[in-house]
Amino acid sequence: MQHKPNQPARRLHAALALALGTLAAGAAQAQSSVTVYGILDTAVTRVTNANAAGDAVTKMPSLTGSLPSRIGFRGTEELGNGLAAVFTLESGIAPDSGAMGQGNRLFGRQASVGLKGRWGTLTLGRQANMTFHATLKSDVLGPNLFAIGSIDPYIPNARSDNAIGYLGNFDGIVAGATYSLGRDTSSAGGPAATGCAGESAADARACRQYTALLGYEMKGYGINVSYDKLFGGTGAGGGLAGSGHYDRRAMVNGYYLFGATKLGGGVMLRKTSAATGVTESTMAYLGASHPLSAFLVLDAQVARKDVKRSGDDSTMVVTRLTYLLSTRTAVYCAVGRMDNDGAAAIALDAGGTAGPGKAQTGVMTGLRHLF
Image (cartoon, rainbow, N blue to C red; front, side, top):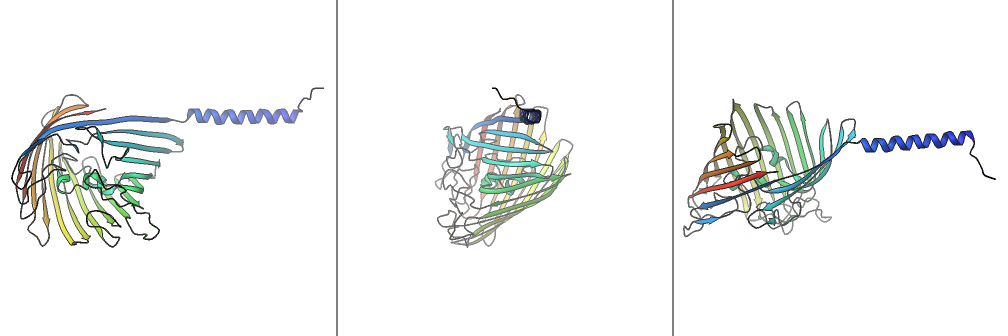
């Protein structure tokens, strides 16, 4: 004889079916998106005095042209009530050879996952820290091959491994911070790579790093201050071979728009306590960006690095002209000069070489495509 469920059981089954259906419908309606994006930017450059003999060199740079080449994946899932899950995976590319950047890492530019809400964004993983964010609006040349990244390669490469990050904007008030448990697990393939993995039970301070940013930023003007301190560890490069050594940067940056013309600049105070001693320096930069037409943009920047208790100072002047072939494709050219005093040997082109005490001039022309 076939058993038939009683009336309460049928009602329970119907309620369960309705609940499961509602959950499934909610999951199906959740807004989720993944974006694939990238930049391919390559150039040909020629610089003088690339060595002590004063020889010139013509080359296709691997680090950057006007912008570093990359491919990335960015995703968002709306979770409801203004909360979203976010992730970024971004790989650096050397277009001259096709190699991966940032120490041959698969996702060396960014690899993070987080939550985003009205209160800001919280992220975990390898990510840009606050020194990177601090100059985004005030540096008119950005990570150009000839720019302040030549004087301090860390600035356009300011990323931290094993990091907890936060960034929020509250009606123009910008606040952010990162804390890294082990700031740099690679010692190869990049100007900021120092091989300081950290996360050591024997030394809790080894390879830790913290950065912070506070500013007020509107469409027409803005100012921010940032602080960055990273510690050394066993085997780390840059003379930071112990957790008692550190590299510290404090910056003030600002920008102002005069109509369509943008003026931006900043000052960075740096102190490095390394095995070889203590070094202190000040770097200041000032630049302007002006659209000559709807398709033609002129950028110019001057920067100077002063090393305390030393005559090994450097001064840089750069001009760049960019012609927009479309909203995604542009051609550009740049000319620059780096004057090195004393034994200073800072190259005009990021990642390049210069003869000690020699002035270096350079020209660059390239093509950029965004997708």
